[in-house]
Structures are given as C-alpha cells and as structure tokens.
Image (cartoon, rainbow, N blue to C red; front, side):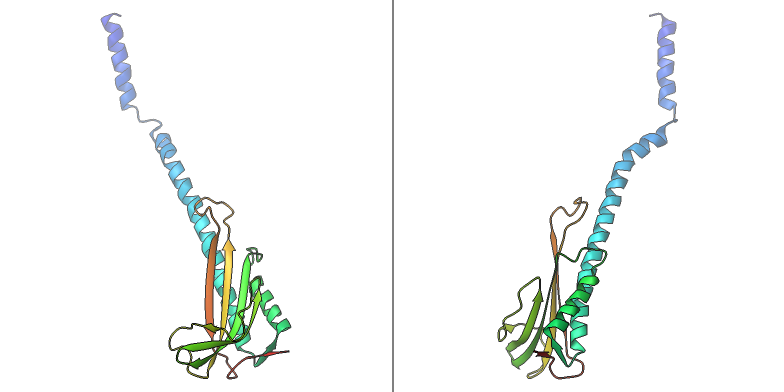
Length: 184
C-alpha cells in the first residue's frame, strides 16, 4: 500500500468515528427491550391488583348485604354469593371461594359460630370458635364474618408465573338486630 492509500484509509476511519448518523437508532435498539419489559410488567401488575381489589370488594359486599338483614335463608345467601361473583367481572368467578358466618362473643376469649355457609369452600362448623380482632364486639354481641379466596392466574405469566391466592376477611356488625338468624 502506498502512503496515499494508508492516508485514505485512516481518513475514512476518522470520518466514521465522527459520524453521528444512526446514533438515535442504536440508542433506541438498546432501550427498547428495557421499555417493553417495564410496560408488560406494569400491565401484568395492574391486572393482578385489579383482581385483588375486586375479590376484596366481593367479600365486603357479601358481608354488607347479609348484615342488613334480620334473618336470611340458605337460598338467599346463595343469591348473595352470586352477587359477590358478579363483582369479579371481567375476571373469571370460577376460582372465587366465599364463606359467610355469623358469630357471637360468649366471653372475653371465646367467639362461637352461630351459622355458616360456603360457596366453593366448606362452611365453618356451628359451635366452633374463631378469633376476631380485639375490641370488635363485646360479650353477647354478634358479627357477620365474610371471607373470600381468589386464585389469580396471570394470563401473561411474565412477572407472576404461579397462581397467587388473594384472601380477605371482613367483619360487620348486624345493622338492625342483635344477631342475623339463619331461617329454615
């Protein structure tokens, strides 16, 4: 190679080093996978959070609808459970499990189940004991306890690859009577 050929080759490398065309495309190619990762992760998180909030609202609604009654039949409780399942829309209600119980405080350390019904899960045994938050009810007072369990399976399985179970428990005191009774 002659001296002029080396000079031309060196000059083309210098020109290539100072050329700024395509820098944006290279930066975009480096950032795009990270941005896509964050976008799909955030979308999946938001879907899971929405399912969790709906399951919570479902348990609260079941307790609220039953706490408004003076007495309720098993068929009416099943209707209330259907309302709880409708709240899950647009999510599937198939993995939803609900249970509602009425309990009365017997003494400072004992809260006994008066009646219980379950939808997708077993009812609590009548006469069994449960633990309620301190100061919620006094001796002789009753409470409606609603529980929901929802097995959320993300449709993307990107950030949440396994089934996540959301569980909620709500306690509401009867509104118009001392104790909501289960009618035959």
